[in-house]
Image 1 (spheres, rainbow, N blue to C red):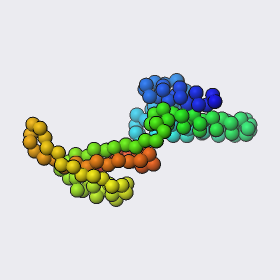
Image 2 (cartoon, rainbow, N blue to C red):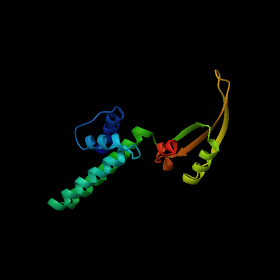
Image 3 (tube, rainbow, N blue to C red):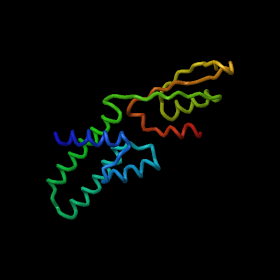
Image 4 (tube, rainbow, N blue to C red):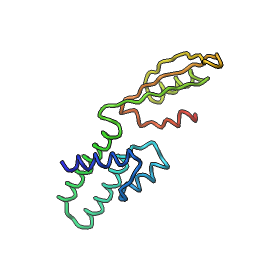
Length: 149
């Protein structure tokens, strides 16, 4: 029960761009350089490394296992606070090269995209766009990769 409350509290702190002064400082530092990893996954990895070092030093396996379970549960709660239970992301891609982008999306992510034609209210020019909806398993793609390439 305590793990759930801890995870909810950490999720709210992270959502508000805050820090508790522990290993989440390192998480915020890593997130400032690389946005492709989830906050909870980075925190879980760092905490499991710390627990592993503790296990090697003190040889208390039972405490290490309980700590690992608590970290995994609180990490899941952080995910729920950040993203919700079931979520998906929608990407709106507006470009002059929509056909090339649609082919790249099909190759790299293997999802369908739906095309639209938009007309600007001021410029009166038409632009093509694609709408891509990603499920949770595919949301960890590096979206900046597609923007640059």
